[in-house]
Image 1 (cartoon, rainbow, N blue to C red):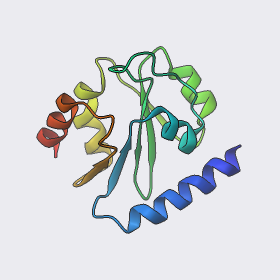
Image 2: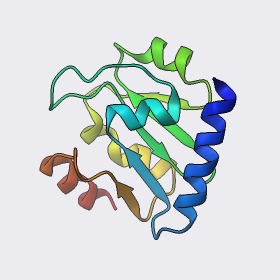
Image 3: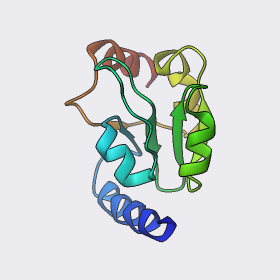
Image 4: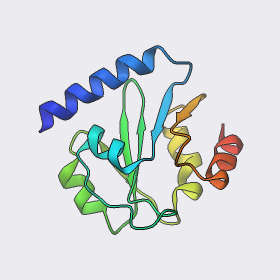
Length: 122
């Protein structure tokens, strides 16, 4: 499975090179699994088991304490960042860690609140 994930990430990064952003945020459960192998389930529409931040050099799976051990086990290609108060509160730190200037994201599942938080951070 690791080789499959590595190939998917390589192809994703090839596509990312053609875009104007340096970090991409994956929010949809299906896409998160496809790119990382992480099987954490989004139990409610406004809740997520995790988010992926992918750059050309790094990939971070951010999640909360309930999924931390599972994320480490299922997604060894990813740095696991465990947030305490939700993604919105941790976003500035994650984006700073990745030197993000332009963030791309899946707009179909992103809340307006989180979108506004992105704008504040970049």
